[in-house]
Length: 410
Image (cartoon, rainbow, N blue to C red; front, side):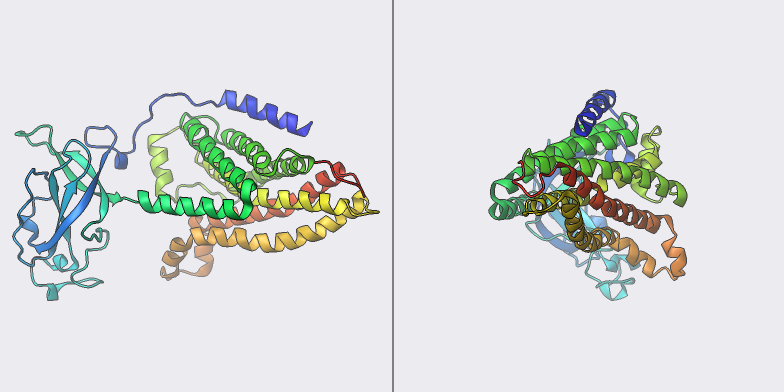
C-alpha cells in the first residue's frame, strides 16, 4: 500500500514537473562574445620556448608553424596544434606569463611572489609538450578576417583517464559482486539519467525544487533498490524504510535551513544561477541538495537492516519482537560506523574551504558559524539524524513482514 502510494506520487509529480525543451539563458562565463554558447575544441601542445611576451601573437591561428624568437623572456610561448573545429590542422601560440613576468620584462632574478621564477603565474596552466588540452574559440573581431577566431586555454582533456578509471570501477564492482554488482552499475547509470534528463532540466524550468528533488529521489530508489537487490519482501521493506527516512530528511533539512538562516548565496555558482535563473529558489535548491545527498547512505543502511532482520527472523523459535531487537543491535553498530563515513565525506568535500579558513586569523566560533561551514555542518547533522532514524523505521517495517522462525519469502 505504501509503495503504491509512493509510485502514484512519483507518477503525478513527474507529470506536474516534466521539463520542457525551452532554451535557458547562458551564463556569461559559458558564452562567447556573440551571446551564444562557448565554442570548445581540442588541441595538442607541440612545443614550448621562453620568449618576450610582446612577440607572441597569442591565440591567433596560422596555417604555418609560428616562428617565435627564443629570447629567454618572462613568458612561455606554447605552440598548439588545433585538432578540431573550423581551424583544425592549423597552429596557435599561447602566451603564458611566468612569475618572472610579475616584475616586468627583466631577468628571472627579479621575480616576485611565490613559486620558482620559471613557473607559470598562479592561475596559469602548467603545460608540457604532447599535453592534450581544450581551447575556447572567441571571435577575433578582425575586419580583414571577420570569421576568424582567437584561442585560449580552457581545460585539460581528461577523456582517456576518465574512461580508464570508469572501466576500473566497473570491473572492480562486477568481479567482486558479480551479477548483483552489474545490476548496481546499471542502476547507477539510471540514477544519473534521471538527474541529467529530468531533475536538472525541471529545476531550470522553474518547477518547485523540493518537489522535483523528492520525485527524483523516490524514482531513483525504486529503480536502484529493485535492480540491485531483486524484487523481494526484504527489498520492499528497505524501500519503504528509505522512503520514510527520505521524507524525514526533507522535514529536517527544511527546519535546519530555516533555523540556521542559510541562504545559499555564499557559493559563486549559486549566485550565477540566481542571476540567470531569477525564479530559482535558493533555499529550495539547498533543501534539494540535502535530500539527494542523503540517498546513498540511507540506501546502504536500510538494505542492510532489512536483510539482517529477515535473516535473524529465520532462526528457530524467533519472534518478530526478538528479530526486531536483534536487528537493532546490528543497526546500532552500523550507525556508529556510517556516521563517520557521512561526516568525513562532507569534511573531505569542504577541505579547501577549511584550509582557507584556517589561515583567515578568525576565531573558531566565527568560522564555524559562517554560512559556508554551516551548510556543510547542517548537511552532516541532517544526514546523521536521518540515518539514525532510518534504522528503527526500516527494522520495524521488516519485522512486520517476516515469517518468524520459518523460511522467509523472497
